[in-house]
Image (cartoon, rainbow, N blue to C red; front, top):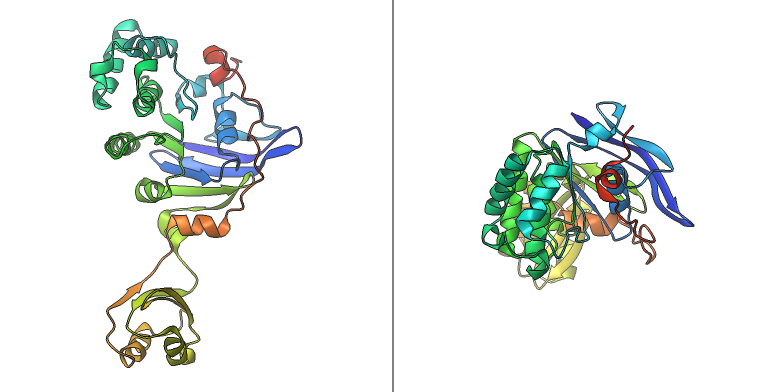
Length: 322
């Protein structure tokens, strides 16, 4: 199944939150949605879920605009805590599961299963407000998963988690993707996004500025190498002048080289060896963090959606029934 975000535009007063936001996520994909604060990620997710209406553009599933029935197959985890703080954890999950149409027996069984998987079963009878922020995140993920949705939309799901919790959540997301769930999540932890995502969309100022697989995004038009050898920068630049190489010093005796793809890397290495012992000569591809820094424009400091909309039950979350 293909979920497509098509040319979304959305403004809040004079603040243009979305300016042609477009991307596609397919069945079983982990799609990482990254961008600066205010780049349009949360607004896009809220439009996908029917919490907000776009000024123009549409969200489609297999070519047809999303309906109320389609959104029943979505699990949503907001960045803000969306739980009832004075309600017991298990009772809350069971209640949310029944809102999704599960009978009580199945709701209890699934709630207990996800609490166990997320290592918080021992806290099932405690109030949400008694949990740490990280454990509240685990409960929110359980709430998004309890009805076995075909689509997961997660806004900063790793926020506040310790390394062990991150690994637990990562394993669950990979498992759900392998089972055919389409997962779209935003995160500022770019190393994590790079490690687990099938595809990534980088957004800036309300639109996607780069998207593709990690390999596609990291592919450069030139050759790049990381080199370590005991020479000074001027000597290295002089020696590599015939190759028309851009040399950047990274640290003491550590350099970054950028040169045309037509250059023979073995000839380059032989020239380096004439200068002295080469301790490292490694092909280099930029990581997601570097790509992000190079292409993203930070927006002015402002609330992305101005005043947050108050949720009013399931209909508010999943759109009005038609």
